[in-house]
Length: 210
Image (cartoon, rainbow, N blue to C red):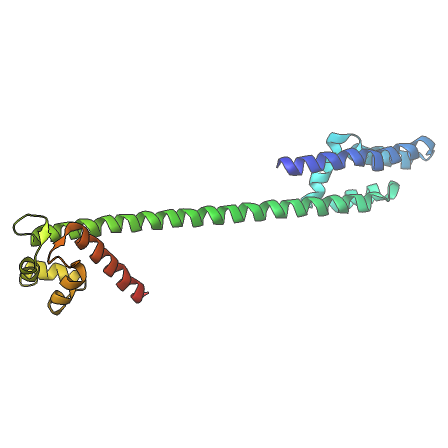
């Protein structure tokens, strides 16, 4: 709005010089009463910055502009390129402003979608970690924070824990292979090995699915 107002104000200043002063010069030497009365009416449209700005906005919005253009053109033919130049510049600026607003809104919407997606991923990750923690605690029968082979194998024999493993896409036949993958070689799986290994394997499986 400020940009369009500034452009209209600048063109109104030039319009006073290009149109208003020209009509005033003609009026000084005009001796036909009818033409003089008509020029006074036309001058009312363009006499001063305020009326010219109102006229330019009227032309920009194509609000009954044709009849006024024809009357002004009789006494100031140079007004034609002046008005068309104003319309061209104003429309160009408006189109760029509208485009900028559309692009900004699209980028804002995209950023909001991205933020929402990241929040959802973070929430899902937190939920998975809690599920893994609960599973680890169920498997750790002696509570020492480490799963030995017997505890790990027993988890696949328990019906409730077998169901949890299936939810993680692991079957009973995967028991030995999974233990060897998670174990760093000391014969036991601590919480770090358990969480990191399963999270990494789950992420790899999701990548294959994609």
